[in-house]
Amino acid sequence: MLDQLKIEVCAANRSLVDHDLVTLTWGNVSGIDRQSGRVVIKPSGVDYHDLMPEHMVVVDLDGNRIEGELNPSSDTATHVWLYRNFSAIGGVTHTHSRYATMYSQCRREIPCLGTTHADHFHGPVPVTRPLTESEVAQAYEANTGKVITERFADLDPIAMPAVLVAGHAPFAWGPSAKKSVENAVALEAVAQMTLGCQQIMAGQQDNAVPRLEAYVLEKHYQRKHGPDAYYGQAKSSS
Ligand SMILES: O=C(CO)[C@@H](O)[C@H](O)COP(=O)(O)O
Image (tube, rainbow, N blue to C red; front, side, top):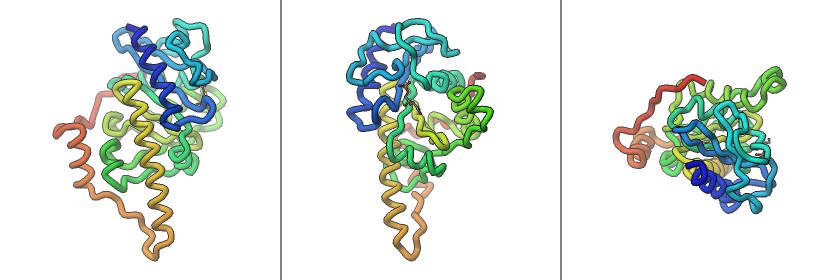
């Protein structure tokens, strides 16, 4: 079972380059086998072009390495925090993709301006609070997961499969490693289009950027996720 997951996670990491979501090794994808509770993640600092399934690292839900010679991604603690708290997700993608990272660094949400956004994200893409000095000093990556799940206290990670970490960069997730990459691609696309809209409107007398109407948002989201789209999920304890 994990051999197949290693193949999928390796392919998902390599696809980050094809989607122009990464510079150097600034990104990592993982996937979870919920049956065994094992997470497969990219090794730290390895060039994407050199990645092979056998390089993937297997960790448990506390981030302890179970299998693999290489060190797991430096963001492993964030990935496993998300798997522990968002029970319905199967894959996580973290990148420093340009436009979504600009919004993360400006600490501004990405408003829902159009149907492209609505097809993937049920509302504005939220931004977390910044980590405190002690949170950074104590456990930077785990506390990055903590501020994400804090921000999702009243949000559903199925309806909103992405977040902007203040001062850092985006995380996206989905039912599989591949789907988490797709959500990261969609996030970067809507971030770029939103920035463009804000630049277009900045030069206008009425420079308020029009938000997508709520009834259009609902229609598009339900068209993609079904009329009974499930917005709420019981959160497992971390
Ligand atoms: O967020 C960061 C650094 O800010 C990470 O995404 C690294 O840029 C990639 O780390 P590895 O996955 O190669 O350890």
